[in-house]
Image 1 (cartoon, helix red, strand yellow):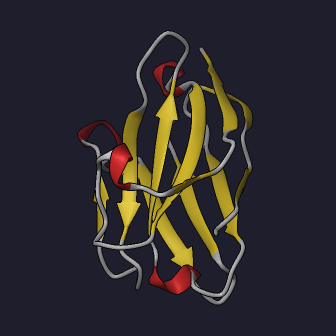
Image 2 (image 1 turned 30 degrees about the vertical axis):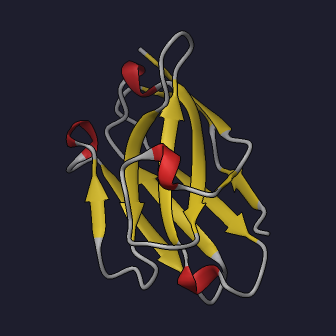
Amino acid sequence: QVQLIESGGGLVQAGGSLRLSCAASGRTFSTYAMGWFRQAPGKEREFVASISSSGGITYYADAMKGRFTISRDNAKNTVYLQMNSLKPEDTAVYSCAARSAGPYSSSSHRYDYWGQGTQVTVSS
């Protein structure tokens, strides 16, 4: 069982930056591929970024390429999402997810554990 706790969300003006963190419990964090997803009100959950268990491979949704960076620190059991040049359309609840078997993925159904999410609001 893995517990994930996100932090770092908040209110930011358009063009600003935020860094989200996702702290994981357990001793096997370094074996999990991790992902970030988001869900805006009235919309379906959307893939943001994913990272391999070692951190050597990252993958982004097209809308986030060049603005968002996913990274991880396995010694701290934490995955990060650095978000720059934020836009009002980035407003959503951002959740991290862990996949216990298999490589990184953009498909939410492939992830086994989810955090509660953290709200990101970008004002225009």
